[in-house]
Length: 353
Image (cartoon, rainbow, N blue to C red; front, top):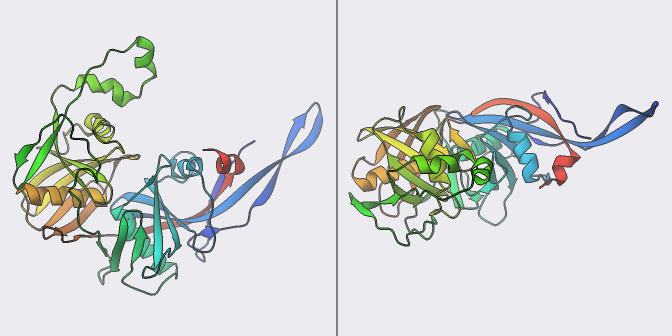
């Protein structure tokens, strides 16, 4: 049997694990009343957002929760779980010189390297939960150490580290394809190919694969890593850009063996842009911090933008600054607490892949 429940929690806790308990559910079998016992684990969590990019935050500083990919998918589900673009986990510092470890799982259950909006919420969470009294943190991520700073106006500023341009680090496969110049940088073509498939194969494939053959012109993208892979495509108008069609095609393009975040960039002037991002493993989100960083870095190298840029996204505004070369990218924006809650996760989700 399986069952889940959620309720609002009091203000005394922001995250953590409540002890497992047994829920006895009556059932009828051959006319006899029997107790069907269901083991569940109750989690406390915080719901937060950064410019509309929303997160569930879990505290594992005292003990590991041992969640599976299935459990993360359940938590992120907007109908049956809590609902979020990503789940952020706070863990103890894994090495000297850092304050915490920061782990990120996408809505599809997969763990990813970096999330800029999540980094700001992470910093706000650990301070508000009383896990630290620092305003400047050093946080371990799978992509390297980042330094979030809580600033006086309530926003959070994050040193996201320098961008990475080596295509093998993204990674991006350049075999058999040639870039075109773009400012001091280059753009790469993503071609779409028609394949011969049977009717059964077409019926069973994802929708984005079915759309593959409907796109004839290549997408010219700037390719880089902000600790996670990004492809930035300049468009005339983000509102009419084919995000729903091209987003999953770019995300799953075979030239990106680990998939990619697809950014659709509209340049308003040299210090203002509009951006939509189709995120790897999450779909289009209201905002993407690393996507904003990648878009500004691409715009600076292409000669479209100045060093400091306001990035308008559907969920709000972010500010990105990059002074070029191997200097770090600075991301500034909101980190907003929404509510606290508790949710029960049944044991079938704790053992499922």
